[in-house]
Image 1 (cartoon, helix red, strand yellow):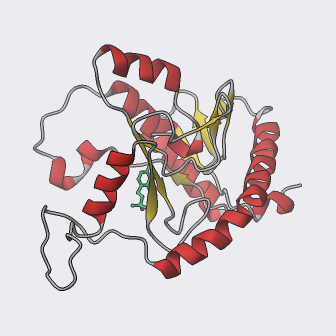
Image 2 (cartoon, rainbow, N blue to C red):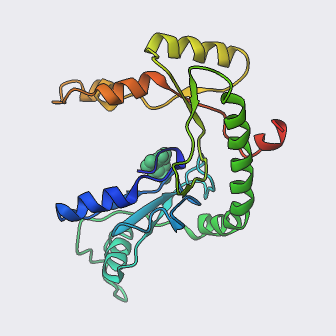
Length: 229
Ligand SMILES: Cc1ncc(COP(=O)(O)O)c(C=O)c1O
């Protein structure tokens, strides 16, 4: 998963996957427009997925796309996302448990129009990130989450990491920011803290817990690029 649009270390990941013969499916839901060493995220593994949900860099209202270079995988994905119905002039025969996950044509048409705007969205997102980078460079204890070296990020969702934070410090800062009219948010609540997973086995999660207590997402709409310059 390319979190917040920032590419994962794909060379490292593909190397581990190759050693253990694991197929890699990239969750590029957040990273349309991001590249790792000039190669687009979502194109390294056997499959990649994109999201066109309303909160993503381009939207079709809902839905997404699967990327693959393997024709068999593409055929199988299309089959399973279109109810696995066998082609027939009148029979309704489905040959697998499958889903009604197709992207309707109306949404796809919106997606085509949104794709034309993607370069502009990417430029504005980069400009906004540049503003945040400059602003936070002078504030001790707050680190702007930047694109990794060799990568070009879409900066889908800007974030800062607080040094030595705790949940109460994070929440106090979120309250101040939101009271001042800045819609800042925490990153996700860890799944093991959600009620339905309370009884599931889990390991110690010191890294995830530290990140949960220290990450703050910043307003990231491309519209903000001009406001902050
Ligand atoms: C990393 C990641 N994966 C998957 C999804 C789910 O995408 P969708 O809302 O299109 O199902 C999202 C979006 O919310 C996401 O950020």
